[in-house]
Image (cartoon, rainbow, N blue to C red; front, side, top):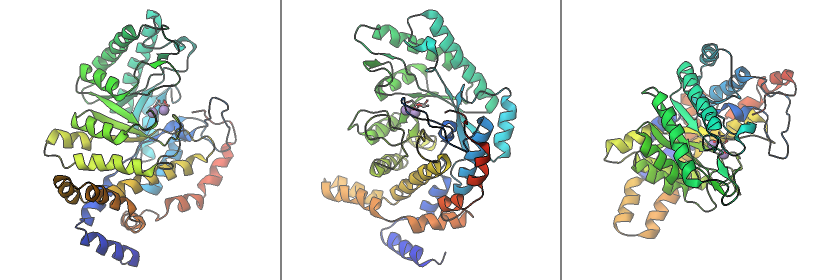
Length: 406
Ligand code: LRH
Ligand code: MN
Ligand code: MN
């Protein structure tokens, strides 16, 4: 790479003691799973907007996802949501994914869109509804066996709107009962990722409202159950990177649903409103990646990075490209943190030097570095530009309006 911008960048980073070859290796190993539902039509509770060119079925969702992977080299797997991505023949679906250079990623059950679940699914007071919900979880384990998926990613809308509406402790037991039944059905290579969310759609209490509740369930289930951190699922001001560090240290961080939020669970493009938060999440992960305890390092190596976004007003594929590129950029910046420098400042109780050592990495322009790795990988230097000038955006217009919703 003879590019002057990169040469300058290289000199600058070498002078700071950063091993750029290692940084490049780590960047090339980054994998981000995209969600099938991010390619479909979506909206708010006020309106679902219909776009021209949206995939009409799960197969076409994967075709769009393949574009994102081909242009970035970052997204070889796609999460599915059942029943949104229910197909007749999962082995055919799997072959279709593989023919596109993709694999089927996390399987997400859906327990929030049926009339029966208005007052809860696995925590409903009615045992018949709990049975139906648990059966759906078991169905998803079977689907994961066919798709070859390792992760089952669970989010429950279950909760109540009013004090007294439900018995919180009974619901806690019912939640555990359902999870335990599902856990028992999993194969040894599967993982259950338990997602929490502070509120919405329930507004008084949510059965799994925070990381502590998800962690508590995971601990009682066993080592194949871990916590999933959706960056949009916290109360205002929550220190997500602290939660991340804590969970890794307990070896129970299963993965992320990345997105960005300002007010609630906005599901906006990750890194669009708070890139520094994303950078600081990676700082904690990379710092734990150097831990002396191999179990902590193993947890870091197995974190599933996933996007969970709904693109209501944006073009779907460009929105996904922007998202994964934002993650890659913040990861690249975090890789420039000189941990020895931070640790020395910490040992000296030098507050400002420690903060400076972390922040400085965030302030570098990593464009030359990202161009260098893309060139080495035979990828377009600017994946967004490459997409917009390709034939694909025009080609998909032939699909017309009325594509798959979520
Ligand atoms: C819920 C949620 C969950 C996924 C997705 C479709 O807020 O973010 O993580 O199942 O919606
Ligand atoms: Mn989520
Ligand atoms: Mn969400």
